[in-house]
Length: 177
Image (tube, rainbow, N blue to C red; front, side, top):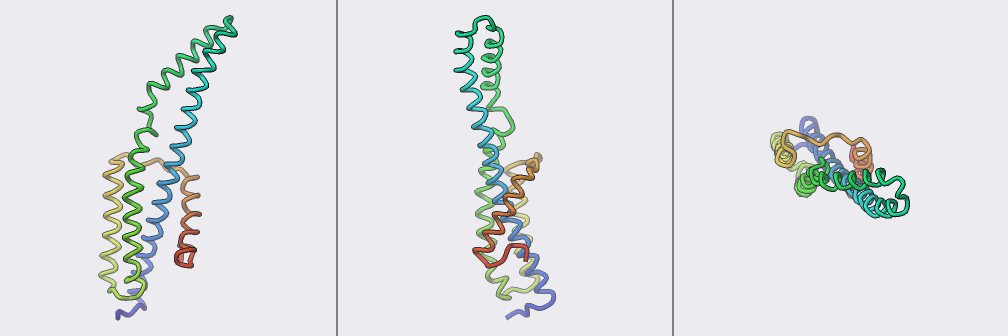
């Protein structure tokens, strides 16, 4: 058994930190996806109201036909460009990244047992930590390329809170320990 004092403990903490950051990242991607879904719903509702409401409004208030014509035209433009809006393109990338990151987080949690039990040397723990970091970077690069997601603080805050609950219920700690 490897001594868990000193240097080994430092590498255990690094692994734990990477594990917790990875779980936060997984939850963050899910929160980001929920954010996209809210915007998708809002745009869909706007288009439905504008299409139906504008036609009814045009029929009732023919005096302001140009307002209704503009609203109908505007909603048709939004409908046409909707697939090209950033959230439409990025939501597919977020879904893929989220699924891959979740698998990586489960892999990292599986490795935590040997790390936490002191069964690995500092060098082995460092290697496992670096493997996780490299796999995470590869997933991000494959999913988002050179254009990373813009930071959404509300998603990050929710992810941090949810991760604390996860680590509290799973490991009896808040994730920062």
